[in-house]
Amino acid sequence: MSTPVKLPAKGPLLSGKGWTAFFVALIAVCAVAPLLNMFTAPDSALHMSDYAVALVGKIMCYAICALAMDLIWGYTGILSLGHGLFFTLGGYVMGMYLMRQIGRDGSYQSDLPDFMVFLNWKELPWHWTFSGSFVATLILIVLVPAVVSFVFGFFAFRSRIKGVYFSIITQAMTFAAMLLFFRNETGFGGNNGFTDFKRILGIPMQTQEMRMTLFVITGLTLLGFFLFSKWLVGSKFGRVLQAIRDAETRVMFSGYSPLGYKLTIWVISAVMCGIAGALYVPQVGIINPSEMSTGNSIEFAIWAAVGGRATLIGPILGAFIVNGAKSWLTVAYPEYWLYFLGALFIVVTLFLPDGIVGLVKKWLGKGKAAPSEARVEVQRSMGAEQGMDPAALTPMPVETGGARA
Image (cartoon, rainbow, N blue to C red; front, side):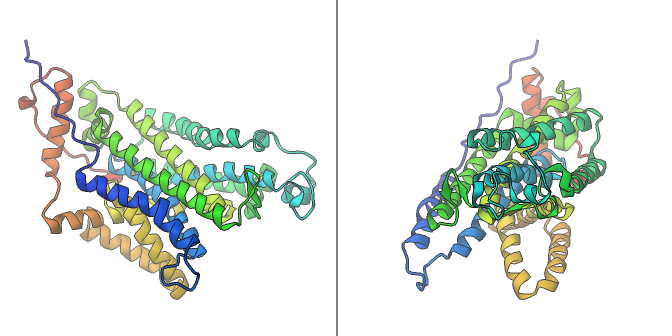
């Protein structure tokens, strides 16, 4: 009879320094940014312009997507090149509500959106039924990406599609959806999409107060998702995800079915991107099918790789660094931006496999445990739950594949 073995003690959600950094970010989002934008003179060196507010708000939406990518790629080993679809679906759900909020203030002074009047539509299509309700919109922002990702993920994971094949399929799915949304008869505005938004909840959107409100909500959402992700990867569920990433076959031999775990984290990741898209639209003021382009989805992966996979904070930093550079380079040197992005990805892949965060940890001498030690820890935790002696367990082999590239 085997001796009962206790699982390793679960550490705190964040270290002391981690909580300090978190509250500093919280204060910056909720107090410092509003103060610098609304209560300092426009000609002051400390003034945060409306352009800067919109830019940082947009990048925070991207950071949520990078965090979602880290959950499925960094911690589960599933490389998706189609998460732009879920981001855009959330954006379109919010955009439909904002289009209904225009009312008769449009160019044609009709209850229908202008593009529908132009196309000689007489009534709203069925999928616009709940677009007039803000509560229904909030529900659909979560529900639509969740349903689409669940249906796709169920059949893909049940068929055990993985690696580069899974990445290609996600890319094809997103490209097919983009072509569908480009068609005028689908009721999504065709290639122009939705724009010219006037108000949200009856409140004008172009006021400084509304812009700052959206900024703060986005920042709080990003911080909330970070804490949620930190808790998730540190739980038993998160340990199984990392075991699936390192040796899925051995996880199955340990008595776990990877399907439920992979499908759950896939849906969670998709919902996070959908919420990010919904926050993105009112701040940018437009949504169209080009947001589903395969290039956008690939950028999600680049942000995670640049910052550092399986670190959570790394992809957030990667989103800020890459998009900050993009905002500057596309103005100063627009013809060189794509070359810079490609070179950055190559350099990170060849010389910084752990990203910027991994490099900083190496410099500080605080690198995480060796991969073999981390795999042993995960395997021992799982073995203890099965009543096995952890000392008898050997390190899990590393499976190579497209998702680990």
